[in-house]
View (cartoon, rainbow, N blue to C red):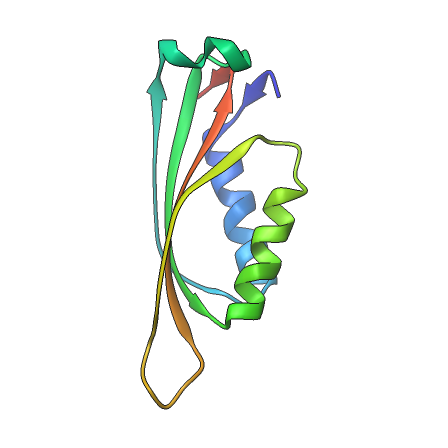
Length: 104
């Protein structure tokens, strides 16, 4: 999209996580100017980091929703670990980047 509201995108991704029964622990984001993005028609990138817990299947459903969205998003890294040995709950750390012309 030509205009990408950083707060709105982060809020929407957080809503998707809650709809998929993921427990958000923290969210951090920053807008970065970048001259190396002109090849894809973008001028800025939004770097977002999520820490959340939930079941693997719910996490995969959340990623599918992001994949089908209108915003170009790269998943830069995913780290996961079981919260404890007696549960199937997993802690996820995700770093992603969204691209746009006018990100605020």
